Image (cartoon, rainbow, N blue to C red; front, side, top):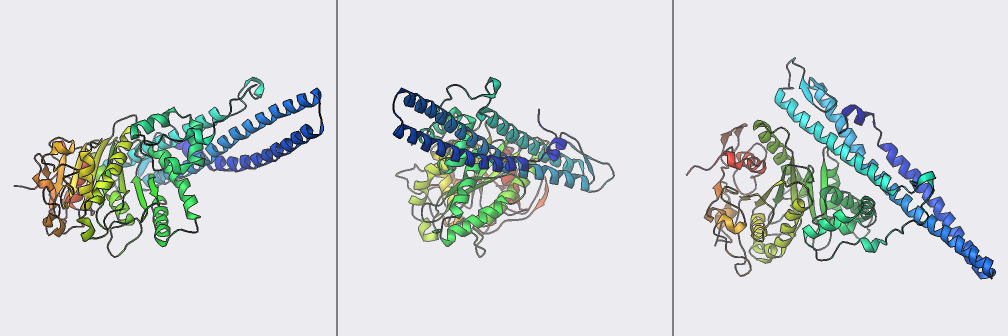
Length: 522
């Protein structure tokens, strides 16, 4: 049974963090005891001979073995408590904040998160109340899941569960951390099978001790990747050799994660010429609809206020897309369906137009993008509706990833210069089936005065050449949600209150077959 709002508001997750700190102090004391006993045994073995000595040393070594096992179990509990406190505290605050907002707007909030308008007029309409209900119930589910996972991990790790509160006679040794290492060269599906075979305490141990192993590993659930990457971020920020770009990237990640609502850091990779990042707005493990946005030439993960093709801009556009998709779902009566939008800067794109004419940027990174898309799907028990959105050179990369075969259900190509770069490695697609999609699931947006799309840099195939594509409007239109603005040029496809963004939201919501989008009239 999911927790209630009164239960969440009355909770105090900070006590988990406090308990973790106290337990860490006890572990330090235990470390001292273990070291003392180890030195004592060494002294006995060196200065006392005979059967009595051998028996005493053997008994002492057995006790030392149990103390060491106890120490490992206590460390697992400490890590679990610390992680639980860190994750539950912002979830509790989000429940409190959203509840207070709903009440302030003139609504009553039930214990299960149901929001009901008071009937006195004002901004709290039934539609707004339904949206607040969805948010609160999602937060309650997330709180309950983290709370239960924390409790289960503590229970499984607790060393004093034997009758009488004593340690088992022969406690199983904790595996060496290297024995938990993920398989090399594994597919996302094989990675997920490996992850599922681990015990909860082993998973928590990897998150705490080896976050670099799993933070960027496709097939590991998004929640675990997020926790690992946040731990990894703490290590990275202490590196005295960070470049200015890397420090600026960390600052933008911090700013994005500090915002209200669920955020998941799915990739943080400082190898290569510049950092690579993927960040989700929402929970990719539970959302009914997940989108992955792939940006194009010149995209960077640090702030670039002069051009706007940077992580802050893509995060903002992902927020706009999530909000617009939720509005589309609400208008369609699908109030219980949830959305997560991902900004994927998980590759090093060409930095200028000249570099964009070279095929290797797409050829080399298509496997990475395909694996990321498939990893979202394989790490879940339920099949999400997955949409890929590729802008500019990102559409070229998305095309080559889709040609490899992915779990994507839909794709939107925006301002595309063409869908293949190297016909010797990737076939020239001629129909939507070449992207492993069916008719009605491949969408194209080509804005007025988009010079990049007009240039047809990779001109053998552009999206509108495909058999079975759908041409979505970027003009000023009246949509089901009201009037929306025109997008012009190459960089305004994902701007708020535009027809282009509305049409993307319809696709992300899985409603492309319902003719809710606005097409370009022939």
